[in-house]
Length: 426
Image 1 (tube, rainbow, N blue to C red):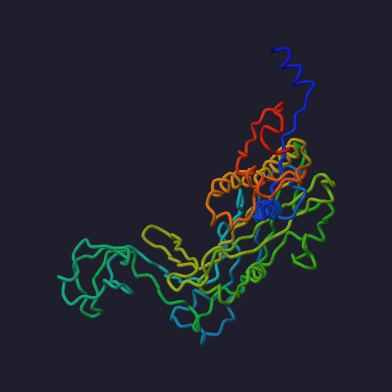
Image 2 (cartoon, helix red, strand yellow):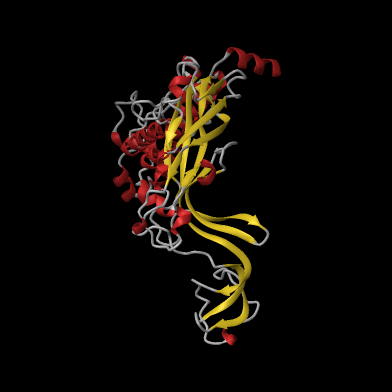
C-alpha cells in the first residue's frame, strides 16, 4: 500500500476539477478581485519591476561637514540699532564665533548650528538686582516677593525685597538681567550675511548586504582640487559638487532666508544613494541631495530655534548670549540593488498566492448563493447561478433547474467517481 502510494506520487499527476457556472455575480466578483490585486501589486512595486528580482542593500556610512566663511557687521548704520550698547555687535564674525561646533559636524548625521541672530548681555556677575521682563516681577510690597521663590519664568531666586523704583522683585542671580530686545529694528537678523557661508559635505558609504567591496564617496574620483576650490552645488548645472551655500539650502527647502534668520529653524540635507549594481557600480551609483525644513514654520507660539550660551572670562564674570540659528541636519539614506535568485522565487510565490485569492472568494460566495436559492426573491435578484453542462442541451429547462437544486458543490470529490452520480459532467 505504501509502495503504491509512493509510486502514484512519482508517476501520476492530478489536476483540480473545474466547473463552469453561469453567474454574472460570480464573474464580476472574480474580475474585480483580479483587477484589484493587479493594481495593488503594481502599486506596491511603484511600477519598478526591478523589485521583483533584486534584493535591497541599505546604504551605511558616515558624513562630515566643514563650514567656511566670514562676515562683518561693522558697517551697519547706528540708526538701525534699537539698543544703546551697539558697540559689542559691530565686529567681524568668523566660523569660530557663529558655527557650533566650529569644525562643522561629524558622525552619523553631521549636524551643526549657524547663528543668524543673537542678543548679548555682557559682563554679568553674581549678585542681586531687580527682575525684568517676567510676569511674576511686579510687586507693591515685600510681601509680594516671597523669599526663595523661583519659577521657569524668573531669572533668579526672590530675596524677599521689593524695589519701589521699578516695582519689581529683587532676585539673586547673574546681574544685570538678560537682554530681551533684538539688536536691530524692523524685525531684521543681525547675522543675515551668514547665508554666504559654504558647507562641504564629505560622505563615504558602503553596501555590505550586496558585497564587501562596494564603497563609494560623494566626492567622485574624477573631481580635481582646482574644481573643488571653486565649485558651488547647483541642482541643475552642477549637481555633483559637494560644496553648498547656506542660503541656497534654505531656498531649496522652500523658505526665504531673511525671514527664517530672525527666529531660526531646523533644516535637513539628505544625501540619498540609489544604486543599481546589475548595470555597473561606477556608472549607476551617484548621490542626490534633498532639502527640507523639519520644524513647523507656521506656528505662532515659540517659532524657530534658539538656545543660550555663556562665555566665562574669570570667576564671577561672564557674557551671556541668546542665539537664534539654523540647525542643519545632514543625514544619509538610500539603498543599492542587485539580482538575487531567492528574492525572485519568493516574489513570484507571493504573487501566485495573491492571485489565488479570487477563486477562493468566489467559491465561498457560490456556497453562500446556493444557500439562498431556496428563497425566490433572492433567486430572482441573483439570476440563474446553477451548473448546467453543455453536454446536456436536450434536457428540459425544468429538469436542469432540478439537477442544479440537487447539486452540492464540493472540491473533495474522489477522482474515480463517475459524473452521473452528481447529475453533472466535468
